[in-house]
Image 1 (cartoon, rainbow over the protein chains, first blue to last red):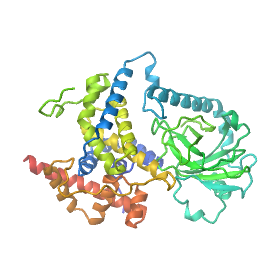
Image 2: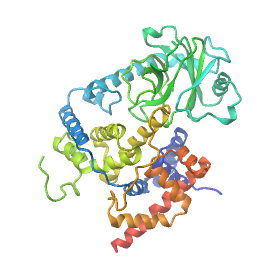
Image 3: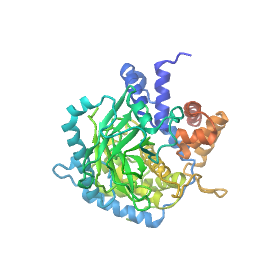
Length: 288
Length: 190
């Protein structure tokens, strides 16, 4: 059955209203809209429908303690929202725990670091995106899975994780981004991120990472994607149990559109929703 | 802030004022949409610290992105609901990504008979009537995906269906529900 562009646009708008679009779907949508702008401009009303369905939920009064907390946040926002020179640079939702202002500043620091790496390394990445084993990496090394990953691709279940990473590295659309050391404590860390935007999955190949005690701390992957959100996407927590090479599969639960960097922090067991950092290692990508 | 006897926020758009730095509008936004956002958070996350943190995130985002609201393109409540739902889903998925030692809220809280709803009784009847016209699997997939905020993978697991089938049910269900609601609204208006 042949589907018209209008029907496909409507489907994608429905998907967007309910689940959000994957990177591949977002590109398809953009292309369709470019070809058929009149179809996309017709308001489908899906958001109103979604809200109507959401409002069948029971009504619950907000606890007084939460209302007080929000009132304080409102006052803080109102006092902070007085425009200052350069204030727009700090615009956007907070990303990290701590006071709101320091949180924003922390994120700006993150972004600045990621952007600086990206700018400095564009040429390098252009010649580094060819498939290949990361420096110091050997197949059959210790392997893990970031806790976001729901079980991996069944078709690849019989492959060693290092082989799976290598297989993905050779597929169209995959980029291989070297880790750049970032924290003094992590001098000597090497390896790369193998990421395929269309498939929304990837592998971290790492060597030289410190072994962590999962009862005390875990590593957490973050994917910086300003095109999607001003908050970095949680890539999941993982452990390094061997001082040798490790390969960690990851599959973010939230769609990633245009990642500009992958970064690792060390957090409390189970990971965090917002990180204070610092970044331990970072793999910047050429934007776009 | 003194409360007035009549609903003070019924039609006025608050977000444009929030975007202009109006402190009263920031507070009014909380009063007008607090119950909606908190109710959705409880529905999707269960009551507790995660829901409270998520609600604070929703309002901070609303205050900061208020300038993106365009009254010509849609209703303010829909804008608020969309921002809230996106943040709540993010929070829910982050939490579900944590190790299983974390407490999960997979099911909405139990409801007492006669529970008050966010929608008016008239709207509830319209929505239920429209939902009853969907195929059962479309209605079930929509409830899981929209009301509970499950990902399409989670909906597929709950329903024991392939991912593609779930997406199809949700798409067709949503399109049909929109059309039925539009028809019933026209009936009410005429």
